[in-house]
Image 1 (cartoon, rainbow, N blue to C red):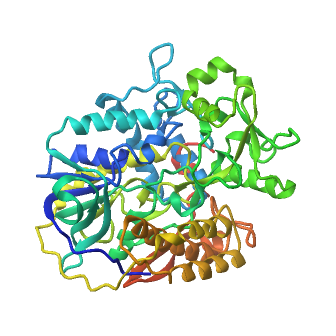
Image 2: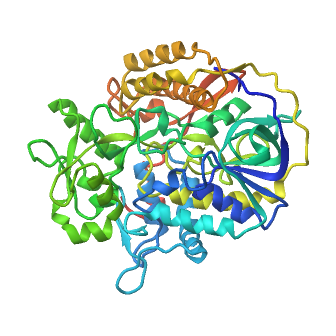
Image 3: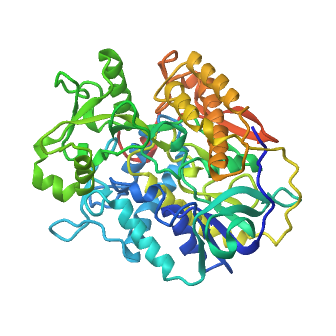
Length: 552
């Protein structure tokens, strides 16, 4: 893999104290918090401000907001879902600071749904033992949060925004710390083309890697760019093998590619249930929570029945919810389904698992620091330790919110002096965008929901072969494809080494969880294009939950 991306020399330069890469809940929260404490804040985003994954979040945001709920109970549910691979301290931070963070969103102007008494309307999703999911617009929570955040950003004249800007690589100083970032900007006046932003700190909030697979709920911008630029610069990636496949993604046929319609877990939270082609229910007897079991459990149950029957999908039955309920509670999902010729009010919904969320990412501490001076990470691009091997439903928006606030609390006091970038002697390279589809199909078929040693070895060989297809021209497609290949290969390496089944990592040849050998984390690092994967043992964090004060 290249140690840096081939790119033209910067044709323009600018500077800011802090550059934030990404414009979802994590990036915009960090920007709004930091603007009061640092000189200049620049937000760069690959598309427009609302093009990332936050906009697509349906179910809601989880926090102990109800009178009968507690952070301790939320902690237990998170640890159980994470299958022993969570960082308990990080989870405790998430659940204890979460309620205040959500109330801050409300104060910012986010309009969450209310019940008849004027209180927050809370629902339940998979893996939760309490109603603790706050939602907006029925099933448009992310869009409403994004609206409120963008309105606040636009009202803050001291926050600069550059849209249509792909982050190419980080610039480093002589001490190996962050000194800036190169961008490729399309159609932004004098800042068109490749340029450089000199800065004192970078906050990565660039989202996930969903486009490394053929079918994903992630938008087109989710090409793992933040993960790749951090890895190339010397930061460590952790838990890459733990990719969550959402169990109920609308099945549009064998030839459908790219972003697929998500059927929120909240639909099952309101009473929908899974059935096979004979009409038999899938989940009773599989897990005490049945259709509201953690996502990895439900996805595996669906895949097992698909393999047993040879069917390409299962069905979600939500007909009994009725037209009025659908129109009020899930208007977005209803409209999307009908746009594909399906009416959930009268028909079963065909569903199958698809890539949804990267539980791993750039390794951080509890304040978002990476092991690269001046580089912080938050949201899906980060691995804070809260998700472990399987993210609990609706904890993703909360993570971005909580840990961006924590970054903003410490970063101003840690701002490094201005420093000059040094010449980058890492080997440059670029893979042609023409191999993207084969890359995605390789990842889906061999590094997807069900994995094995043979399939992972085949994937590694195929990805290595694809890496030999050098790009003939420098363009965004080639930059993104190179990032996808870099992260896909690292993911496959980690998945091959973890010889067990844990959370969302499912090995057909090692079907049981094995704490004796594999309780811990795989870290990925890179030096001039050569990746190294190392295992770091750590005690499982879901085996003794009595100290939390909750119950599973």
